[in-house]
Image (cartoon, rainbow, N blue to C red; front, side, top):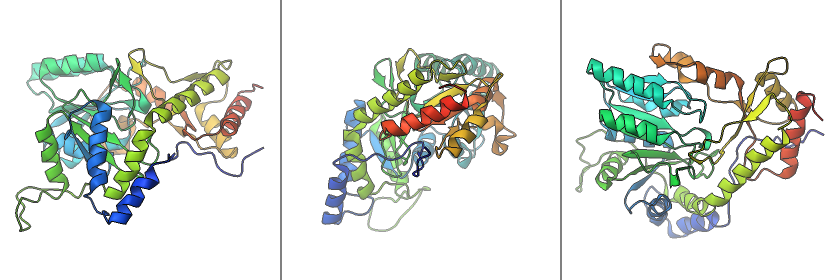
Length: 380
């Protein structure tokens, strides 16, 4: 039976405390971009990541965090930034806003993230040519960490700073440590579809508290101290509101529960579909904890249904599913950008499908997704 209510891919999942903090904001009239919820949210986020207080900045979006982070790293007009091609466009749009250009690096199959060997080839070549890039953006895709040791080793060898885009990876670990704590600047997202949400928002973190304060200055229209509205630098209206920060505080309290549940959902798909050779779960890289923010499968269409046929079948059954991110080098927006490799990312895009993964997905809802998928492949 087709459910009347559409089964969506990833929806917000509130806990018990979010409304308490929001009510406090209304009761005390802290309804702007300052207030006790913001201060506490930033501190609690630092505690979660094992950072010193003052190392986090709550912002209106993860994209805003990337924009400020790249500016902190000195990215400007004419610079080159290296980034993975398999990502969401928000990872790289801010490069263009700063007047720089992006060169895209292919994925490796063990994690689907940036291929460290290709990155090394590019950086070695740029060093020989005397034109090293200004920065490297590393994305932790779908809740799985990139291979940070290999990436940081080659970047350190050439003196190129890294920005970790952990928008999809809060709760992800690399060799026992949270992602987003190793780079000079890291960014997170709390968009409505993320593992926890503020409905919309992001966080910039940095080990250097002076860098965080500089980003804080830019995020509040770069207004100089004093009674007058005096400005000597370009700034932005990027701060998170105190109301939404209250939601974030409550969501942090249930993060581990949400990670556990997302992993359970992914492994249930894996086990329930294990007898279908054409389907396989996104790899779980050996070097860290994959949160499985989204449950992503690969479809081998040889002699059977392809990925798009499965998406159509699920849609007909009132189930939302989507392809994996369309690689940046295949986007018309970046038709003139340089790309190193690209075949792996293109293959993952052609065959990858994201299934409903909400942490409040019910067993009956997941059973419906599983039954529909099995039926499309002729399995009982």
